[in-house]
Length: 75
Image 1 (cartoon, rainbow, N blue to C red):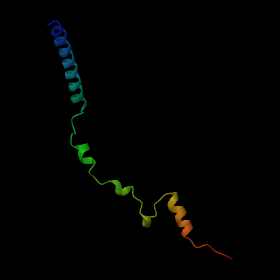
Image 2 (spheres, one colour; image 1 turned 90 degrees about the vertical axis):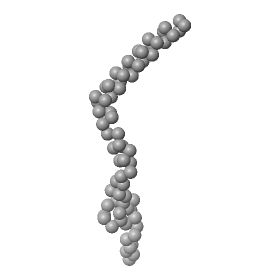
Image 3 (tube, rainbow, N blue to C red; image 1 turned 180 degrees about the vertical axis):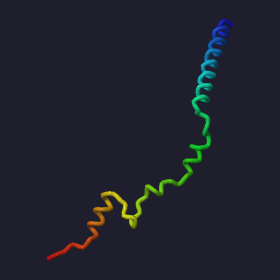
Image 4 (cartoon, rainbow, N blue to C red; image 1 turned 45 degrees about the horizontal axis):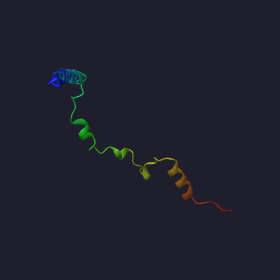
């Protein structure tokens, strides 16, 4: 029975801390956009990152491949 007298104030203390953190999170806007991140992953925005050979974009590997495909002049 002596243990319960220390557990009740301890649990009330933790409950009060939880309540303060919850109020702080709501005031800071942590719960404003609950659906945004869940839906954002479904958007197909990786087309901008894909290389297209006909648009002239590309890195060094594409430039090296283009140089290799050019005919070599032999004299």
